[in-house]
Each structure stands twice: as structure tokens, then as C-alpha cells.
Length: 501
Image (cartoon, rainbow, N blue to C red; front, side, top):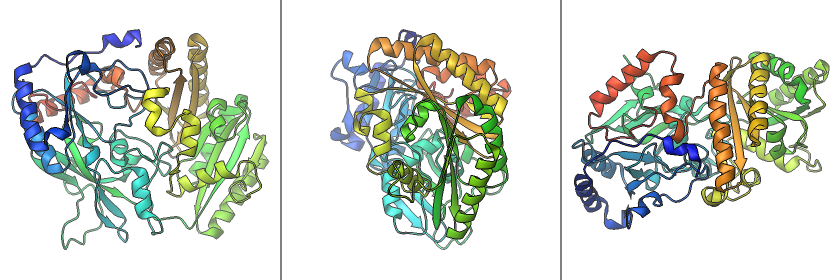
């Protein structure tokens, strides 16, 4: 395992006897078949299995698999009882790949696996919302919406990934930031109380979906949060576009800054919809690139006529500016084009239909989704950048410096989240063995340090960097405020100690 990982904070000591008592009570609630316990002390670090990033395997007291929100409330109540009861680390489908998979931030936690809560409780296609549980996957929800006037905001990850788990960690879909999809949350507070924050459907209620309500909104408190356990959410379902087209542009790496500024103008003026993306040469390989050129995907959706008109404007602008070595908007519609299948998958994803067979995902990862943790080596680093050519060029230069220093293969994809903000997704692939993992983790540490010094801070943290929040926070008083809330709501530190602490 990576050498540096031994510096991760351990959880405060608890009473083994009290934790055993709590787990016995949990087994009576759930049934022994839904409780996984370590056979011996050595097994505590093997209970969760491998993780694709080769983070240090934390010691785990047990894995609990509730089937209902009511059972979750009882379990949370048990663990909140005393400071010695132990703590809970919650996962949805456990596919937080590149950031820790199922691993807690600290040793000694009991993992609360909510994958069995997999119902779509309610669905309103007219108003555009669904009430989903943490185990609902983007593949499952998209199948349910097939042939309807609504879609889900999918990511480019596997079909088996959780919609809600990703949204709660501020993931980004192809339609926008998934936090913006959250209209209401059902939360189990420490002690076992259930509250519903934001907008929630009720019999006979005709009020339109509006998450903010009256007075202070509690909904954002439970995003990237250890203040409660989320058991369901109201998620927005965007209208299904009548047509989607993706314009594909290729360009020289040396022109990255100029292309960024040019594309920013197009985004600001509404010539592209959803989340356009720019790929460096390494990332572009997955979409038919030759490994030497950068690539951009600019989606347009709407009525067939509007898509045709905007695509024509985009391609005219791209030809006229002279920055691009290739401009194409017909790959997805031309069965004879060599990139027809890849572009078709990309266009369908922008239209809310994920690649259920995971063809692009498997091509990128080299293994099927169910083998990622056991066979692939993979890390994520996720900073935010200003949407400006000079900032992107600076970030790209830092990436190349780290790659050269460490010898680790790095790739970067820029998600363009409006005219002012970029989500930069840096992926590190490495052989799934100790020496390669140690180099990759050194590269990750260097990226955290170099990007923070340049003012580019991450918006998601992996389990080994959970303690970076203090160093990265713009205002220590704001962090102190959230810790006062934690002490008030969860005085016995029952929920995810150390996670975004």
C-alpha cells in the first residue's frame, strides 16, 4: 500500500464491549444475514475488499445492510447512544471510485451499506421529479424513464453508480452539477429522528417544486456532510430534448488557452447546452483521439430546427476562428463515420440515456465495473478552475510538471459549468500493485500542494485527504460554524468522523 497513507488519522478509541453490544442489537433489527463481521482482528482490514485507488484499507468493525429507511433510523439511534457506541460510515452503491470506493476516512467505523434501499418511491413525469433511495442507479432510473418525456442527469461513469450518492458528494453530470438536481432530502439525524428538508411531496399538495422553502434552508447542510444519514431524495428530472447533436473539435495542445477563451464566449452566448467538455490528449483517447491532439465536445439540444441552426452557427464560428484542426458535427448521424458509435454514445448520454453496456467506461478503465476495485489502479483529483485561458494553461502546466516528476500517467477533462467555472477532472491510471500505487499517491499529494498554491482548490476530497478542509477553507470561522453544528447535532460523533471534518 502507498507508504504515505499510514499518516491518516485514526478514529478516537471507543469501548469494544459497547460496540459489540450495539452490533448485536443491530443484528436483531436487521437479521444476521444482513450483518457482515470480521472473523478476527486481521480480517477487520479485509472486510470491505480492495479499492481501486489502493488507499490503506481501514479497520472496520462490521458492515450493516439495512433494507428500509426505518431500519436505518433504528441503527443510527443505536450508534448515537453513547460516545462508546462506535461510528457509522455510510455508502450507497460503494462506487466512489478514485476517491476511496467504500473506505471510511478513519479506522474503527461500522459501514452502513444503503445499497439495499433501491426503490423509486414516487415519480411525477408532469412536474418533473422522482423520490429515489440511495441504491437507485443511473442505469436503473434511466430505464424507468425510457420512452417518457423526462430524463435523468447522467454522468460518464458506470450505469451501476448511485444517483444520490454522487449528488451528495457534489458530482457533475452531463446536464450540470448534480447538487442542483436535489430538491428535497430525507435525513436520519443522530438519535434516529427523521426529517425532510427542502421540497417534499405530500398528498393533495399542488405547490410547484421549489427547494428553498421559507426561512433558512437546511438542505445544503446535508451535502458533503456528516450531520445525518440521507435515506431518500427528491431529484429533478429534466425534460427530454427532442434532438441532441454534439460538435467535435480537435486542436493542438499549444492552443489550449486560446481555445478555452473562444469556447467561453460560445458558452456565455448560449451557443451550447448542458456541460461542454474539453479533453487533453490523454483524455481524448477514450473518444477517438490519436493521443496527440486535444478535443472538445460541444452539445446542443432542443427542437430539431433549433439544433440544426445552432450547430450550423457553432461550426461556422469554429471554422472562422482558425484554431481547430478538425470540426465535425455529423459523426453521430453518419453510420459510415469511423467515430459514429462513440459519438452516438456521447450524444445519447447528453440526452439522458447512459451507456447501459458500459462500453466507453470499460474502454477507459480496461475492466468491467464489477472488477474496478479488484483489478484497476485509479485515482481522481478534482479541482475547480476559473473559466479563463490563462488559468487553464497554468493548471495544465502544473499537471505536466507533476507527471514528469513522478512518471505517472495523468489525463484531464474540463467540464464547463457555465461561463465562469470549470470542474477539472484529473484521472490517474496505474498498475494495480504497490510500487505503481506509491508513485500515483505521490503524484496526488503533489497535485494537492501545487494546485492549492496556485489558488485552484478541490471541490471533492478523497479519504486520505479528508483532513485538508482546514487548509483549503477560505474562512476558518465558517469551518468552525459547521463543527459547532456537528457538536450540537451529533455530540457522540456517531456519523462519519473525519469525513469533510
